[in-house]
Length: 356
Image (cartoon, rainbow, N blue to C red; front, side, top):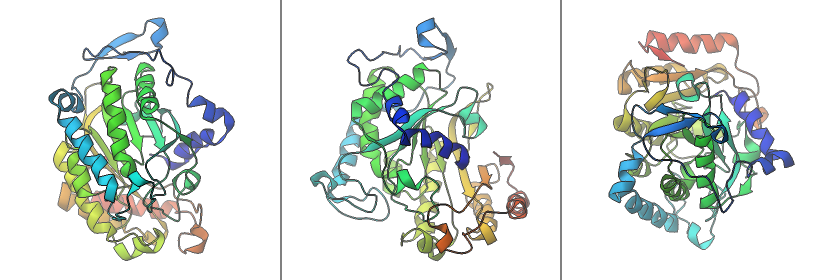
């Protein structure tokens, strides 16, 4: 996702108007809109009739809900909160008892903003946007975070599961091509509970998991059949460098690589339908850092060797020194155009063919 676009989108949530917008599309009301769960989505304004657009592939979470498997996994995930190991930091705090781990969250959660987002890869954002929910807080704690007010400080509005479900439903009614959880790692139990409520109301568009990539392999396995589209970051190819600028995060490369490989095992490369929209798959993102601090050359080789040259990648060149970057050279300056172009050349030389 284009970080500048994302930041502009999120900044609206930090004003009174943006906060009010969280409740603008029907959620939180007792007469929340229902969606017909008949294998179709509604495009356009639902109050003006709209039009139906056939879904070529049903989201995977629908069958899990019908079989009762989604409810079983929901219980497992909530149990993990009692000695939290939702991310590889393994805080082991009892968040259900109000204890707070690295992510800064106990048993509640906040939403910074939500709505159609056009900053994603084209097959995901399309013409009507990805229905994105920007979740507050984060277990990665990057010192160069471009949305630090949300991910570090936790700005956002306390939200219930029903309100989150209503957000998903409202965005589908507005015609978004999918719904997406942004920075979901530390809140997966909450998200599954809200997803089940939304399914009961007719949610039937692909589900995206837009993550920093530092995810627990065990948790990702529990998402098999739940998530249709994964959008993980793979920021670093050296764990020591990662730890330096991510507040001591342990074994970054090991955990991120294993999580991404499991995501790829589940859904494969990004599958783009005849209408130009993605139905399922993985697109891996790499933010090019100054002086190749993230190891873009090694990233390209890892993709080609571990996922294959048909994997979809997004080489991003929009790094700028945000938050505390000025304290950590060489992250105290923007990525140059030459550095970005070199990263793309490395990816092409590795044989990668699908760029976004």
